[in-house]
Image (tube, one colour):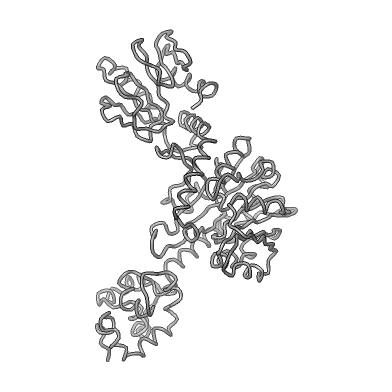
Length: 529
């Protein structure tokens, strides 16, 4: 073949092998290597991008461009894989003449597959008159994100009556000039400082003309029909005032590869943790669930949706005075949705409004980020801690699966043999209700864990002050007249034992039935966490 392949692909001999420049140029001119893509995607090299790919990059699993999939080529032609040759080099120098085939990268093919599949699920709503939607976008030095967002923007909406308000937070790149160049109904608020997410959206809402507001992150990449789907969901569902969308992780070429094209958001639920206390919002769906699982291709009610893409009735937004400006880029969306829910409004997840969310491109976790996160959560928990703990507990007791999809967990502490029969009986009955039961006979390490919701103790022979558990765990003691009940939240008795200022549960017939019935009444009417 006239070419020393080993010498060409050897990093140490690459420079001398450039006497075969015609091969280098042939690859460079093939259209299958994209230097700009390579340099922007991979930052762990310097110098000539093609040289790096030919010598090292292909061995590290890097892509030469989005137009050539090395994995497909090697899988299709095992002889090339056995030879150890760079697949792109082989195709350009030999494979093309041999009639071998190549494909675009998986990232392109899978993205097209997602977009095409979703077309089958779109409602394509029709309206007697399309209500005006005011799309609000916050931006700071997000030129590349804006270009991705606004590529074919109008064509993808499948909806014509909208205005766009961009709040630019003192960008120093060409963001504002780019926005002004677009042939779209855009107004720009040009700030001198970086205002908060709440403040920016609230300022834009004041000048918005729409019947509905759409909060939209600048790092969103829409797919066809998304806006039509969201507007239809809010217009044709009574009492719905807020609609969220299905957000998908984009393809990640470096870190987070395993998240590529998985579910990022399908509505929120809450999960438990010990520090900081005690509950936090998480995506409802497992990221491993198929994008087009039957549970995700329909509209579902939920307690909260992300502010990254949220369509809101403007009258209700104004009624609640918008987003709370005590938050700085974090939890303001969850707070807003909880305020909606508490007032009796409904929130909907629109399962077929699909958008890709390039979240990692805008979120920089600096020291100030973590400090803001801590302050946001402190404010959030002071406002919502009791409310969430109460509702999660009721949700688990009744298996509603609305605030959370986890089962109720009960930890029973006992250090006496004469209680074994009773504890065995109630444990089995709790299990029959799909509750999780843990029986602890040794509390030397004081460990309960963050997943337990209720502690039922048949003893006071341990250090209750230092148990390792969530702060909002409900502490219940089964009193036999000898126990110290001061530090427990509730008291269970089998007779008329009473204790001042303590919620009291009297067991008359069946421990489990009496306990659950009276517990719910106390939580609803009396008990404050």
